[in-house]
Image (tube, rainbow, N blue to C red; front, side, top):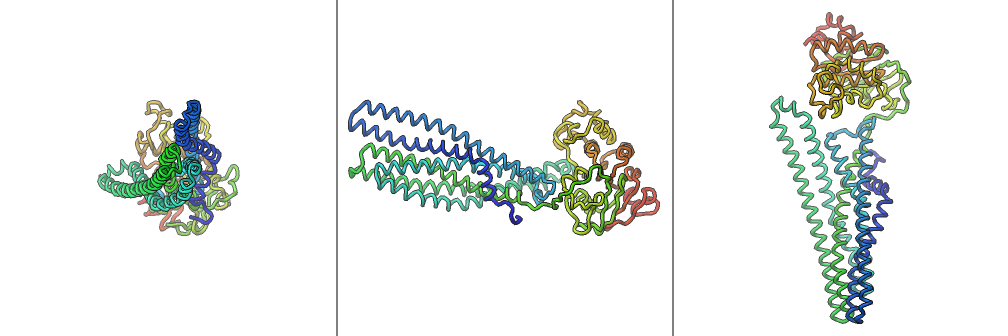
Length: 565
């Protein structure tokens, strides 16, 4: 975790501060509820003494009316307090989910590093819920403390020894309960980590289900998930045992404490120090105290789990950015002049490349790692370890990542589709006009795909576009990239699943649509490379050849083997 980043404690405090008004209101109502409930045995004891000692029906009636009023107030306060407290927890969890979403979507990246998508989903749901519940249980804890306080005062009025027994006994009990919660907190954190990992593996396997079936690798996938799930189950059982042990130990301690109060009350009654009604009140209060103690046990367990989840959330929020955030904005109407000067990153070795404004440039590499590193540099998902990349003469490191991506769009080969209409997938939140969308649909031959669907472009696609074939999905993804209408567009293998006739048609339309704007095609497709102005060949992480497609076919055997294989 970087210095100065949020910690688990910061996350918890922010969640509570954001719901301070709700927590305070719910606490006051809960304290009123518990205070009234603590007074019930006191009023019953007074009624017994009144009936036995005086035989006054009027006095007894008044006390019964007081009792009825107490029940009315406590029931009303309970319902209202519970509703507000639960609302505080839900609002706190919602705010955390928004913070996590903003961090994951931060243009600087970094939050997703070393985390499966399913793990991030688990943190944004289960962990956010557990931290949010802290705002809820704080109100319950305040109510329980109020109940203990009212009970202690009532017992002091009945008998000073009884009151002192409660006042002096409560702090050690609370301290012991906190100490006992330590193993639960540690095991809860492990449980959440294993559960998040299992969710991530499951999502990963489901995403690649078709590939796994095609390879006949179902058994290996099931074995992998079974092992991960078993680890998660073991951690969950350990946490459950720890919680059961925690609750059992605290309940045993409170049981002994309440029994001591009852025995002391009985002894005082036999000695004549307190009346029968006061004995009934003391025993009733002793039994009532079980509720607040159990509530404090629940609160303590929730706090332990909340602290563990808060640390996991803090790890995501404090994750270092993958790239530094520049402040400059790309100039309006960018010329689209991209230049790489001595770029070194991963498989790239001192790459020098000048992509002229408005050109259609092909890049060929047989090394997937070099392609991936080049895409990361151009999309500024990572900054070069050496050298730099420029846009219109300005280093990308000086540009705001979000503003940069409004000028430069890097469309990866495995672009995902969403469970919405085909047109919504193409539009993807952009403000592209009807003509721009129509041109993009035509250039990518997605209009032909729409013609085969029952509702045309309004047809809702299945999750990740699985209702379409591989080639159809690629065309929709290409259409989306074209509709974005960026000054610089980088496409990685956009037509690998498209038939050759359609691919040639797409190549020609793509060239016409992007004429005058900078376009980079990273591909080994001969049909696409044939329409480029220039082709650059990367070999061993550096520029090995540069020329037209026809020239390289005629003079470069390695290039010919790469694009005609």
